[in-house]
Image (cartoon, rainbow, N blue to C red; front, side):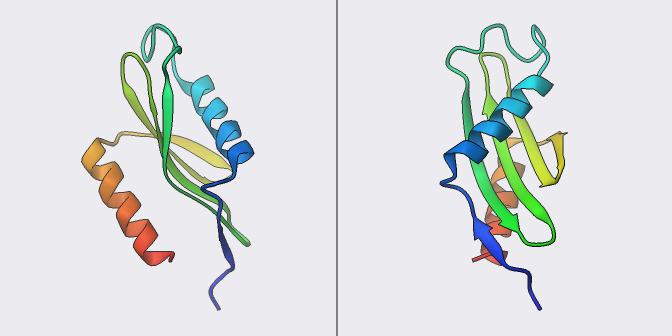
Length: 97
């Protein structure tokens, strides 16, 4: 039986918490000079019973675009590019509609 999934893409509090955690991972002077103007874009954000959060998103700073994934309780910085971000997002969403 497939676990129950909730699409949380409109959950502002959850998105802010994940974005703030990702910002803590970024290295000042390496990944950004100034966080003013920094944006975050989510590819997907789901809460899956017996699994937890499943998310893919990117943080765009004045110096770089950093990609992150969340699986359960773990957040990982990914070595992604825009094409891989889009194809992974599309594949995930096609399986979880």
